[in-house]
Length: 188
Image (cartoon, rainbow, N blue to C red; front, side, top):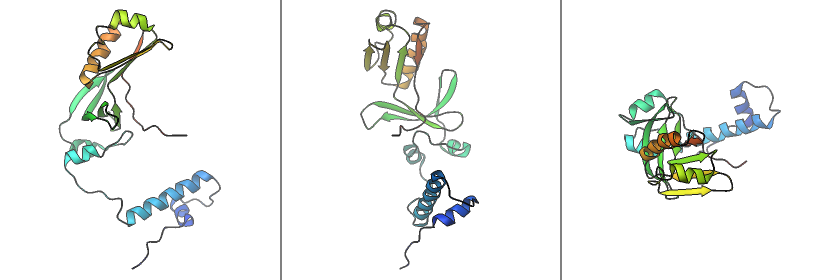
């Protein structure tokens, strides 16, 4: 049985057409390519056709999809947030038990939202008074008096989008947003 040989850093350097490996960035990039090449050659990383649902389950925030990949997913629900169109890839519950929706933006980037409405720029007492009834459908509502921030988490994306428009109308001086994460948090 032949052992699988990892390409050397020198071989990877030649893939880039570079003549020296003076910076650590080049070394890291070459090492990453060497590992990726090894995993691919070993058959540990592969692509195979799957059912649309299985493909939807494999997408994560920050991933970029081609137009062909998005088309292959079939008819997806369309929503508009802040006058930007998104396709709903899936809705469900995250590993920490919170409702989550995975979206695709117009460039094909996958993002995720926890249906949270974030309100700042107005004292929480004003938010309670002017928008309290609009935030009543929220599954979780937190007022952070010391920072002047209110966070309302809704059970569905549709409820969050509706509340976004209503709260903006009720509190024109406030900053109101529905965050969508297009990347995973990383430790520095």
